[in-house]
Structure formats: C-alpha cells, structure tokens
Length: 90
Image 1 (cartoon, helix red, strand yellow):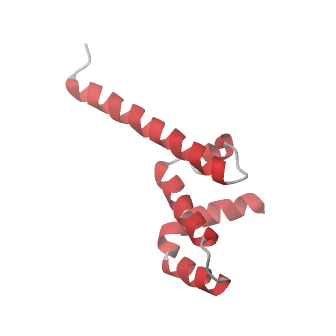
Image 2 (cartoon, helix red, strand yellow):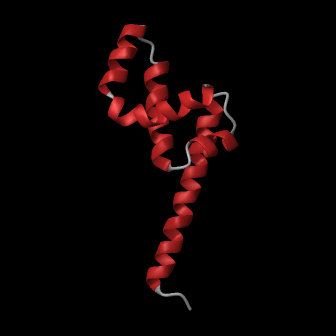
Image 3 (tube, rainbow, N blue to C red):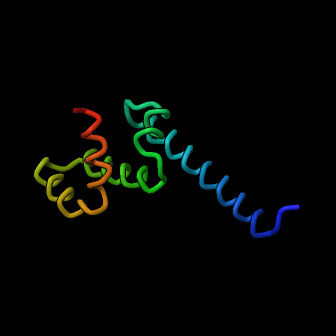
C-alpha cells in the first residue's frame, strides 16, 4: 500500500500532466502548431504559459512599435520560449 505522501505525489503529477496537455490543446487551437508540436517545443507548463504571454503581446491590437516595447518589457518572461520558437524556424 503506497503511503499518503506517495499518493499525493502521484495525484499531483497526474494533475500537472493533465494541465500541461490541456494547455497544449488550447495553444494548438490558436496557432498552426499541432498538440504534438506544442508538447515537443514547449514541454513544461511554464514554457506554455510563457508562449501564451508571447502570443498575447504579438496578437494585441496595437502598433508594431507598441508590441516591440511590450516585448522589451517582458523579455525575461518570454525570451526563452521566443528563442526556442525562432530556432525552429531556422
């Protein structure tokens, strides 16, 4: 019989995986990327959240100059995922 601690760890891991998969599905519905691509490019939940923040900046109904300013202000948050996506394009 697994201990309470082990059961909590298992439940937490399952919840993380479900949330991660759900985020991948939501992102793929808003982009040209498949869920499989999203999982490969953005394996962690934090990566998907950062990608969502990046998408929000780019999709915002503002000028390109305003988007550049927003990217500069948020580079610490979205920079890692931005580099990963750009590498895919090269």
